[in-house]
Image (cartoon, rainbow, N blue to C red; front, side, top):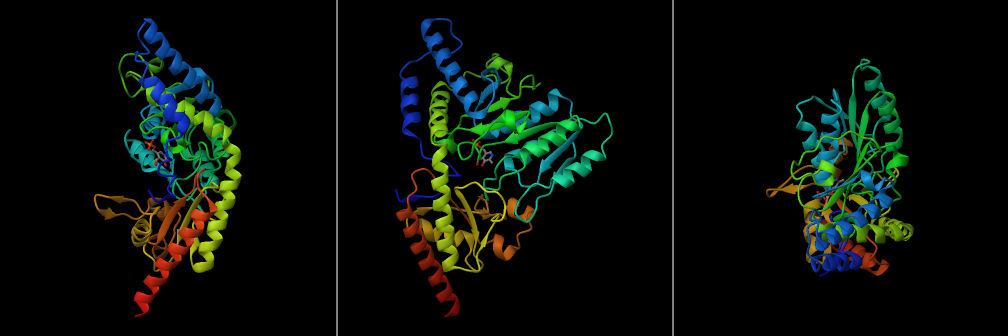
Length: 379
Ligand code: PLP
């Protein structure tokens, strides 16, 4: 299968999650049914809710299971906005596309809050726009905790304080941060916080939205009253069980993140020794310990991804590829990374199974690919 260095895209399924899912598949029952099978299924869902609540620092009653991180972000941002009749919508410029797309939906003007060259959210800019609002305004902000492309960690707690002091709300996309750093909705002061199972070794297509106590939220999926009426639809029992098992395992594995960070730093040093003109995007800001976004001028990102794929390594490019067209990364554009770098940015993201030997062989293969490109150019 080769060497997997794309944990920010998705993490391999954890054994604990697989076992929990198989157990749930083998015990049929609709959590809304009143008979014994239904009650067992309900118990499994409520057990999972308690685990998730513990993992994100919220109360079990304030966890809403969703069909993934995208849905949780949509529900958090649009649900808060609608229930609280927000009047002004602020979105950090480096958000995930699912947040930008959701922000377009209500038809309110979207005010983008810029980021520094290292991708850090501009708190002063937020402060100045909030200061200009009138007393009746009810602003809402969408701000991620950690960026998927660069790993940059955002000053969410400070932004939450500013929003609340202005009578507003904050939705936090914690999809990438979850499992990679300690996380608490209560400590961050978030009103809503989105997480996704497959980024922590759970199954794809399951996520959760955590709410601060007493938060008003309007549902988006209307149906049979599941999830306290906040997300209609029969619960994805096996998915939820797998998510909770992965979350519990990720919590106990949090201390492994230090060694992952050391490995990432080791790889970064190796690659910079091979290509001293390369740029570590977001390298001067607080960053997730598993993520390296590296831009090597003259070594196109799609070429790097293909070359490394042929050599047996899975990595991503900083630019998103959709419908066969490689688009510029909106995140790197928001950071004003010059085109010569952004078109050459790759993302390498490590996980708990990554070893130093794997990184040594990656560095060797990457160095060889770069040398062959340079040779071709000079021929
Ligand atoms: N938010 C961030 C920061 C992400 O990285 C992703 C996935 O790439 C999502 C949201 C969407 O999550 P999901 O894939 O579960 O829909």
